[in-house]
Amino acid sequence: MPFTLATWNINSVRLREPLVLRMLAEHGPDVLCLQECKSPVEKIPLEGFKAAGYTHMVARGQKGYNGVAILSKLPLQDVGDKDFAQLGHARHIAAQLENGTTIHNFYVPAGGDKPDRAINEKFGQKMDYLAEMRDWFHAEKPEKSILVGDLNIAPREDDVWDHKKLLKVVSHTPVEVEALGATQDAGRWVDITRQDIPEGKLYSWWSYRARDWDAADKGRRLDHIWATPDISNAAHSSHIGRAVRGWEQPSDHAPVFATFDL
Image 1 (spheres, helix red, strand yellow):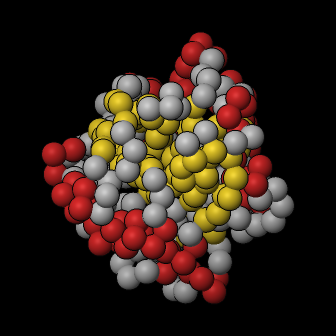
Image 2 (image 1 turned 90 degrees about the vertical axis):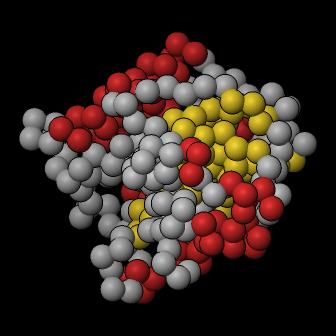
């Protein structure tokens, strides 16, 4: 059962419902994982998504911030969530397709401005969150699973516009990159985007602060699609919908896509 999956930090699903509907119409993924929905589950505009063919949803929400949702044309079973680092935030949801594939949708904490937990509580929360993800994957040993989401870390030198300038900037610091690597290794996760696009600069996020984000192109690859080794070879056709970042009133993230022949 081939299916295309997309992940997108939407930065308010209610505010940007028209953009979600446009993306679904133009790109047509079978499954769309959203982060930073900023909405209680009951207020997610599901009717419009159902009308577009996305009749299944698994979600966790909060008023005004965080929130994750999986919209799907394919039947989904809710298989739970985890409150990593005990933050009380809606940052993880898992669902299973009828073919037995489990999809984990994550929104890892951004971590604030200073990469020092002694002076920045948010950075400590981010590091604790990653450590608990790592430990969970060590214990659970996931199989036939896909992990997607805004992981808020750009791990490789070519995942950022300037490696040296961003070494002390939260999202690309060595301690974060090491923590993400340990989390990835714990589940033996394969970075599908880089499996398909192994070389070159690649970004999924561009700051709102840039006057002309496209021309400046000071991006970071914060959004990821991973898979366990038993299904990683079934993945192909990865790409980032960069043009979506240029739509009217956009999220600062672009959607990331991959197709799986499972």
